[in-house]
Structure formats: structure tokens, C-alpha cells
Amino acid sequence: MPLVPAAWLLQHARENSYAVPGFNFHNMVDFQAILSAAEAENAPVMLMATEDTIDFIGFDYIHGLAAAAAKGTNIPFALHLDHGRNLDNIVKGIRYGFTSVMFDGSRLPFEENIRLTRWVVDVAHKAGVSVEAELGQIPGHEDNLSVSEREAGMTDPALVPEFVEKTGVDSLAVAIGTAHGLYKAEPKLDFDRLDAIRRETSVPLVMHGGTGVPDEAVRKAVSLGICKVNVGTDVRLAYMGSIRQTLEDQNVKDPRVLLRTARQAVVKLVREKIRLCGASQKAGLLRV
Ligand code: 13P
Image (cartoon, rainbow, N blue to C red; front, top):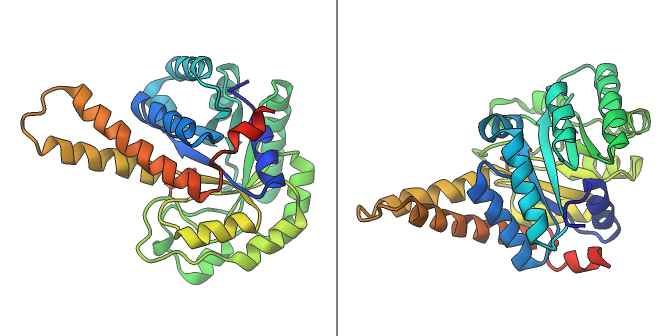
């Protein structure tokens, strides 16, 4: 039961007006931290590996981590492949026990994005794996874009019904003004656009670029239909901030001291984000 398809978690979130937080992990330490935080909050969670992380850790070890986690917890969680662009990786992810994959065809022309997303959905659904897709482009560094460039990349609500119907996706990442990484200025989310998208589809919507979005804006986005909030940079910042601080003490000679403290810092951050998404105490409802 604990390692579950994302669609199952996200449908529950949609029906109960909260969001499942998705956290990028980078190694065993932050993987364990995310799960511990979810246990402390009794919350469903998505553990997400990008292709870079898969490259760094390897499919076998990720599979081992998820299997160990599933054995030792009763928190329902999904193992998600984040921003998959390489179809071989996506197929491997499905074989290695990922319960959710994202195909990121956002840079492709609309028809091509539909065609490849459909292909991924056909393969994934046969294995009971959920699929997230992206329509519109969530930029890497919002501040490098002009307003018109920013708007041009945003999800067009009018295209959503055709995309969802033709692809059969389980969730949809939307570009509504968030960006991956750190913002130089406070991000301005296009809530009208989100509302318009919500009216076009009942598929759970995903907000990427959760780091640096003000709490109030996250809450409003969730109230307007965001069912999953992705957080990556904040996990790395909590981890690295703790490492830097611990290393100021020249007496620390044991990597376990260093990493245990880093793990605690990530737990703290993840618990805050879980509460922000309204996911705290929702695991019990999912177990029924
Ligand atoms: P941040 O790194 O900005 O939190 O974004 C994470 C993300 O959207 C992963 O897909």
C-alpha cells in the first residue's frame, strides 16, 4: 500500500481541496528526510527524481531506496520521475518501480507534445503508473524573460481540453508565472489563468517552481485547483545551508554528524511545506 500511483494521491487531493507536495531528492539523506517529515505530519508525499538525480544515484539504488521505504512506512507515497525528456529513461523508470512519470514535452510543438505524451501514457498505464505532462513552458529563470515572453510561454486554457483528452494524462503541469530556481523578485502568479484552466478540465493541476512562491500565493493556487506543488531548490538550500553551518566547526570530523544535521534541516523544511499545502494528517484518510 505505501508506494502508490500518483493519480490515486492527486485525485484525493483534488476532491479534498489540498495539494500533495512533491519534493526533489538528490541522495539517500534527503530521501529519508522527506519520508520522515511525511511520517511526522502523517501526510501523503511524492518523492521526485530528475534525470540528473537518476544519473547520479542510478536506477538500481533508487529502486532499493523506494523498496526499503515502502517496507518501513505506512505513509502512502509515490516515486516520481520529474521532467523526463528521454523516453528510454521513462521506460526504465516504469520498469524500476516508479509509480509516476512526467513526460516533459513542453518545448515541443503542440501536436508533437500530444503524440509523445500519448505514447508515454499508453506504456505507463499498462503498468499501472501515472503520467504527468506539461503544457506551456515553466521557465528556468523567470527574471531573464520579458513580460511578453513570459506570457507567451504560459499555458493557454483553450488548448487544455484537447491536450487532456488526446493524451489521457493523469495530471497536468501548468505555466502560470512560477519558475524553477530562485526568483530575483517576488513571482506574480496569473490566478485568472489558473482559474480559466481549472474550468476547462477536471484533471489534477501541478504547480512547478514552488521555491520562493509566497505562502499566500501557494494557498490561493491550491484553493484554485492546484493539487500538487513541486519543491526542489528549497530542499537543496536547506541541505547545503546546514552543511556549511556545521562545517564552520573545525572539530566535526564525522560525516554522519554532518549529514544527520543536514537531514534534520530538510525534515524541518519539508514539514513546513507539507502544512502549507494542507496535506498534514491526510495520510490517514487515504488509508481507509
Ligand atoms: P523549484 O526548484 O523552483 O522549487 O522547482 C522544483 C520543481 O518544479 C521540480 O519539478
